[in-house]
Each structure stands twice: as structure tokens, then as C-alpha cells.
Image (cartoon, rainbow, N blue to C red; front, top):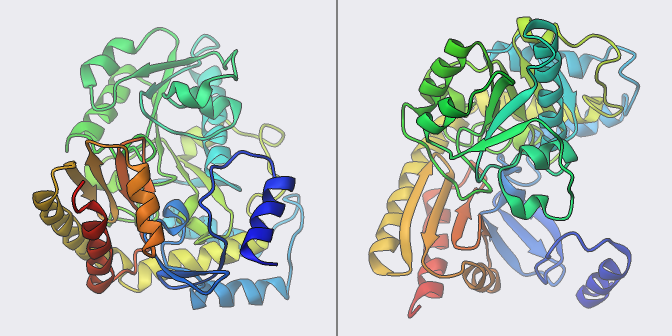
Length: 396
């Protein structure tokens, strides 16, 4: 099929839930992808912070190939080796004692919300069910997670929303403490807000939130779906603050493109879940966990985190230089390879013109360019991207 035929067929048969770019991608390798016409693109979106090891990483491919020839799927009523290995790997490298596997970030956050409520019901009382979440947050698109999301544009048309959520401004400790009520069971937040604009809080913010939660005896849930798995230069973004959450959620880069999510918790909190409380047919299936095992081991064993920190510093420096040349850039910010350029114009035209020049980037909000490339990028890749952006921004 030609490019036009594929797009026409997709528009005819697939529900209109995505505003797609007019390109059909057919192949990926490392930090590059190719369209059906053979045009090459430098991918600084990485499936929205998913393909952290780049496209078609050989170790992930090998792990999935080996597993698919052994066992594709069985019910979670049975034990499987890849799932067990991944659970231990995540526990050994985090604060957590137990893991629940699912298929996406929204599912992981849904599980976290349920676990928080179940724990609170049993240990705090049935009236403790409210979660405080942040304005401009994003936690997913299920009914519970759009309710947790502090952005009305994602909630419009889906009322009535789930009861039990209160919103406060991100990075505002006074507002957070003021919002705690007799019904509050926990606080749920992203260490760095992704969809909200790559919003980075004050250095001591997360530690102060942890202290507030401890003082009031409520839970701290950290949504690391986008910021986790090495994106910020540490395996988990909470590590920058020196704190330990009660519950953490992961997805996106966990499987380097193979769908998988996880909800992690301390032993104390996880005991609230017993058989029958929560489940997932495909959660932690052999293929997904094989991919995730290879991904996590590669991140930990091949210097990916240190490389991410170095490339992040270099990338941010180049963005600052670009800011000095172009007045449309109001601010640049980032931690590791989760970066943004805030503009004083709409970002959509910039994103589209970059696409035409062979650079894939995305927006976070209407006036912010978001950069979440594979963690394996080089200085040459950054220089190439900056060259495209410089051309696109010239005269704007």
C-alpha cells in the first residue's frame, strides 16, 4: 500500500482518537526511523519517552525472540520465570518490596489508586479515601486516572468523575498542606510533570512532600511512568531527592516499546491487596517481562544512566545557546534527557516544520516543545537536532 492508501484506510477503520502527523513509519534502528517512502528521521520523541534504548535494540530483540519460541502467554494463575526475575530486579534496585504487573501507565496508576484506597480503608478507616493530586498533572485516560489528572481538557465530556480527588498547584507546599483533610489518604504526583509541560519542582520539594505525608500519616504515590527508567539520569526520578515513596508506578520505557506497566509498593502497603482484589489478564506476561528484563539490565549494566546525565547536560547547554539566538524561546529546562523549550508562540508549527526536515519532536501543552529522545543519543545527534531547530526558528 502507498502512503496515501495506508492513511486513508487508517482513517476509515480506526477510531479518531489521535491527531496523527501525515507520515507512515515502517522501520526503526537506534535513534532513527524511516517512513514508507524511505525518508529518514532523527527521533527525539522515542514513542513519547518509551524507546529509551533506541529502536530495535539487539538485546531486547534477542530476549523477545528467545521467549516467543518458549512460552507466549499463560494466566497469572501460574508462576512464570521471566515475571519473577523482573520483579526481583525492580525490587533490588528500588525502595519497593513487591510488584504488580500490568500493561500501561494508566493501568499502573489505576492499581496504585486502588491499593491506596484499600490500604486506607483497612488501616485509616473507611472515611479516608481522598487523594490529593497536582494541577497540570497527567496520570492516564481511564475514568480514575483522568479524574486524578489535574487538567480539565482531559476530563471534558466524561462527567460525572470519580469521587475522592482534590487538586493543588504543583510545587506549592503550603497549598498541599492546606488541602489535607479528614478524608485524605495520600498524595499522588509526578516527580517531573511530563504532559503538563516538563515542569520541574524546587530541589527540596519532593522531600518536603514526603515529610508532610509522614507528619499526617498519609501515603505518597509517585507516578514515574514518564520520568522513570533512567529518563532523568537516575533509574528512578525520586532518587534525586533522597526520599522513598510508599507506592510507585512505571510503564513507557520499562519494556523499550513492548507494552508493560508496573506498580511497586512497600511490603506494609502491598499487604492490603489479597487474591481477588486486583488482576490483569496480560499483566507480566512472558513476552513483556522478557523485554523488560533485557531493558532494565541494559540500562543498569551498560552505563546508560551516566551517559544520559552527560547528554542531558550537553543538550540543555545547546538549548540555552539556541535560546540566546531566538526570542521565541522564553525558557529552557530539563533533568537528564527529559527537556523542554517553552515558547511565546504556539509550538505546533515548529513541530510540523521539524518533521518536514526529518526531526521528530513533540509538544507538552500548546507552547512547549518537549524532548525525550532515546537515552543512547550522541552529541552529534543533539547537534543535528539543534541545527534543524535553528533553521525552523529563524525569522520567527
